[in-house]
Amino acid sequence: MEVADLLTSFGVGLYNIASSTDDRQLKAESIHYLEAAIAAYRAAFGDAHPEVALALNSYADAQIALNRENPPPSAETALEEAYRIRLRALGPTNFETLANLRYLAMLRSRASWTRGEPARIEAAAALFLELIARSPAHAQPEYISAPAGRVALALMYAQNRMPTEAREQLRLAVEQAGSWPRYERCMFTAIETDRIESMLAGAPAGTPDMMLIAAERCFVPDDE
Image 1 (tube, helix red, strand yellow):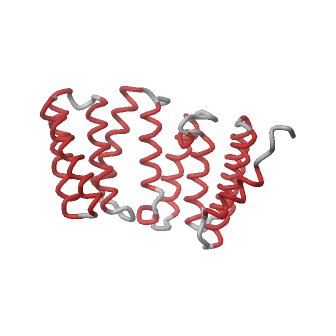
Image 2 (image 1 turned 45 degrees about the vertical axis):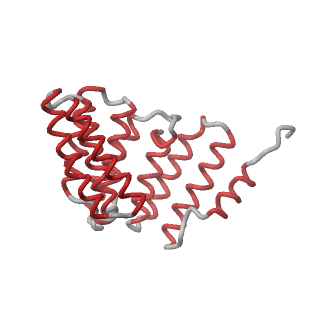
């Protein structure tokens, strides 16, 4: 366990130094230590322990950060195994399990993975629907909530020029956010609608101006 922890610490330390200097070679070197840590955690705890899942997650994180648009298959494989471990060890509604499932779904929603192919789009959508079904309507952090999962699915559909599906998922997301506090719900609706409609129109989304417009539109003074 000590060996595993040291390998992880050294890998993460290298990666953090590389990030501060944008040294891609050093980032790549850090992956070797993170990969070695996986084997050490397996030796210490066995293949089905959450510590192994955490090591697999860290390894995938570093690989995805090196190539955000088209991560290597080994990153996806690591996330898949981490998810299976957490599902068995922690249960389907555990925060770590849900976060892992979302990460895997987001990875497969990338254009480099779906390639615009209907079967791949629906395979990624199935992961999001599984995530939505297990997630609470309101959660902290918000990205683990069912409405946030639906927005992620809507964005994937918008990216693939499927406006009907994208808008339907957005509608369902807003509906599921109905129990949120008014200001929070209003901001969510305004910002996510802008993101999805902008993506469908091929325009930039999530601009600071939109944040300000949404905040002004949603704010209601205490005496009103």
